Image (cartoon, rainbow, N blue to C red):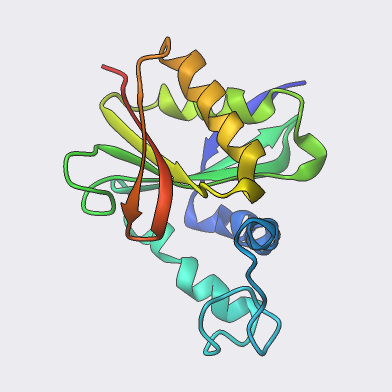
Length: 177
């Protein structure tokens, strides 16, 4: 199985945008969220179609050198994505932030997600942060990040709970200098 991480261009943005509703659906299980009145997983009822949702996501391809939208490919087929932010799209003192991370269910449990995370970590050197839902509904995600960050950085990382721009989270921070 060949795992590849590919920084996407505007021409390839549609692939991540096609996967994005599946990601939001997966998150709904952990956050007990429901679609808006139009059947779209968005907080606002202003988003009426997937096309509207696509427009909101365009920022990822409008700020090269600041925002990095990566596609995860397995044997050259789309398997997920990783969206990486840099200042000013992350907390003060953080160089790189894992904003979104998604792998299709059919690829899970095979080590692909960990390999993809490590590939993206190796793209950039500095202080990293990521966070995940701390609830019991997300035990699998918490275990994944503990294992992945610990394996990658030889157990040299900080794990804490706290308030973020996205609510109360389990936060992981590490340096890879």
